[in-house]
Amino acid sequence: MSKAMLAYRCERCGAPLEVTPETIVAVCDYCGHPNWMSEVREDIVLVASVSKGVIIREFRRRIEEDFDLSRIKDKIGVTEVSGVYVPFYFVTIKAEATYEGYIKKIERVGRGKKARWITKREIVSGTLRSILKLPVLARRSAEDFSINELAEHYKYSKPELMKLEDVDWEKFRLTVLSAEITSDEAAKIARDEAGDRMRARAESKVDNLTEFHCTTKVLSISPITLLPYWYLVYRFGGSHYRAAYAGWNCHLLAIQEPVLIYHRALYFVGALLGCGISAMGLTFAATMNNLGLSIGLLALGAGISYAFGRRMVSDVRVEKE
Image (cartoon, rainbow, N blue to C red; front, top):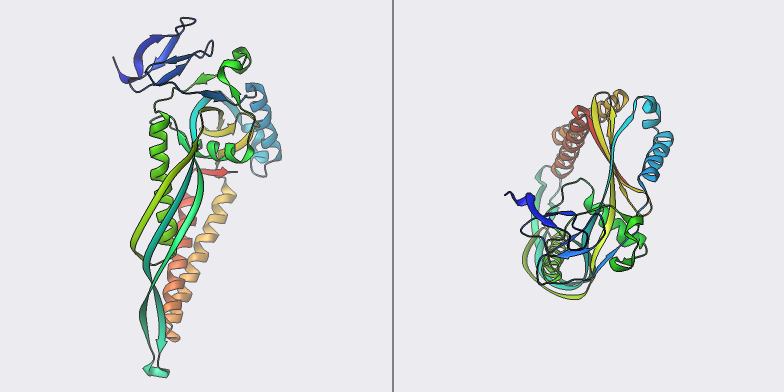
């Protein structure tokens, strides 16, 4: 039997459960009962969700108000709307890091035709401290293009939480993705993530990081937190696009939109602008003997041309809010 097809039934109502060998708890979609598959027991809380109809109305409202979508609203059709509860832990980490590295300084020496540019290295060091609240997906994976945005929006919107055993499941019934990691595993993942973020901060302060040391401490960890996540699929011009919403307040997390003809025209102009900036860099290199400015303009122009060129040939653009 495949990993995704292990046959289990809810110990309360007998409904079938989707369980993998890594599942630690499967919340029954029919009665809301937590079925534990291991000796580990965690507290479970959830955020109440709006209904499917509310999500559809919110999507229709956006179509009416959006500059681009309103122009094609009569050609848009909703083909699928689904909601799930996604399990997270939220881990608060205290992190402290020390670093050492060097920064490069380019200086001009001499004047006129004898002028030249030299690169100097300056050693720098420092200490970084931070308190981080990190979301950890309580699964090995969850495939979608806005799961991270769901967790980040939860952190800032702070919706009301309810204990799973206290809710009327008939009002909140959605498919629940099974949790596959324990709080101890979540703490380890969060500590690793905190270390990576602190290293990234240190690297941003130097051109080359030579030494880095980081200590992390878990200050708190939440219960398994079930966040309602809705995704909507709509059709336009023979293609399908997705939109994702936070289920407690209909906040649009991300939406795929078609690239229309006037978008391509604007992207083409942007690509030409990048080419023009690169040409300026070549001109400076030939006439002003300013190597640093020339290289900067060439890199900037190439980057702009590449970014707009990729968008020009794409059929989908993603907006995140």
